[in-house]
Length: 205
Image 1 (cartoon, rainbow, N blue to C red):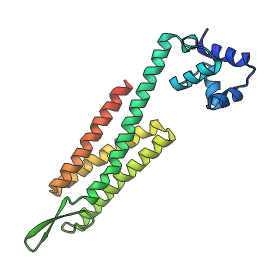
Image 2 (image 1 turned 135 degrees about the horizontal axis):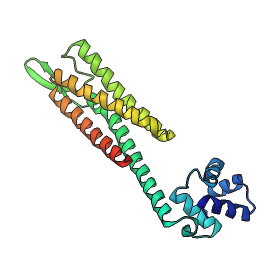
Image 3 (image 1 turned 30 degrees about the vertical axis):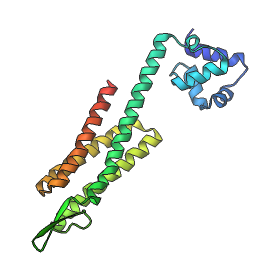
Image 4 (image 1 turned 135 degrees about the vertical axis):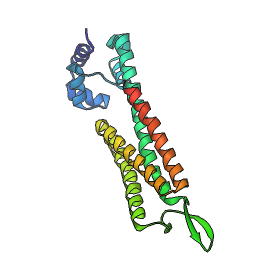
């Protein structure tokens, strides 16, 4: 007997509706419907709740192979979520490019390091481009965090790729401006994001 059939049998043996079982397991009725129709399987935590609620072992609910498959899928999902979370955090961390004293201001023969807000010794065009790139990266970080919160994983990958492209453009532009400290900082942020994106892609295979 398959898991979906076992779950239906257990539920009906208690005289429960899908709504009542969903309330007892703290899940949605849609989740119960999905499991009973064979269109998906519960998480490990939900399996434990089902096992405790009906006083049956997890082995009675699922075969070992299927249990391993669910655990592997859940592990991949956790790794992907962690990569996405760190990626978004790095984008938000791009604010350091604005706040840290990474830019040289020459005053009376002396060179002082200032933050980007105080930086004046470059063209207005360069300042505008940098402000746009910095703002977009921080915005990408906020969007990534929102997508993670909402569980919209498929959109997050697209946003991450856009963020990566913006970061590459920023590194190249700061290089053209010869802002060595800012270039190094932006490049380190880019390298961290590339590592996370590679990890995420490998995890999906």
